[in-house]
Length: 272
Image 1: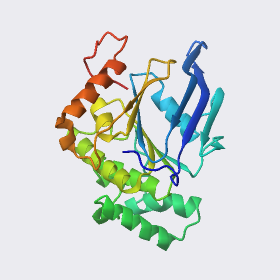
Image 2: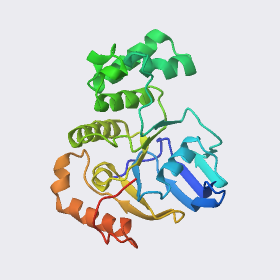
Image 3: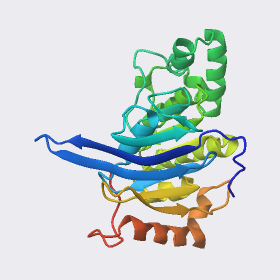
């Protein structure tokens, strides 16, 4: 089911990566240690793991917001030394400017950062907002939007910059179930239309299974990525797939990896 990667951008190679912090007493805490993995381009790669395993830290390292203590990250053969236009990150918390309209939020990056003419940026923004069902809200302010609408605006805000890689750190966390499922469908349709290389962080197993081409399971810090699960569910994918026998088999397999060595013994809910 994997697309040909000959012309796709966004191949990520991580070699011997390490990152740690100091706790409040000044003691070193290892979060990621000796991590080596490759994410193929054109896939929706999902990283899962229990609370504190280093999922978000890995995402921040890939985005260039953090520097590694050791090791290397390469994207399409180029070393990551900081942030770059080839990567855009959507955070857990809203990143919209409250004093700007929806349109002005979306066009800020290309107009200010890339020098795109405002009229052209507005045209591109209108196309994205139409796609996300938000064209009638383009002149509204963030305070006038629901949580799900804000998330859609933020994805449009990222996409207008034409990144090679989308990094999403639990973007639908905290939303009600119906809104979350709607946004999962929005992003899945977008991905299946574009094959934009995606790294999606989540602590929700059902979300991972529904979205992913591959799930990378992180063990307790600093064990790093210990298992890779190929999700061979058909695309285009709808929620009907969650009732299939194959979905249930993959869910059982993933639960074994996620809860290995924990007190949950394969039950309970994952946490961030």
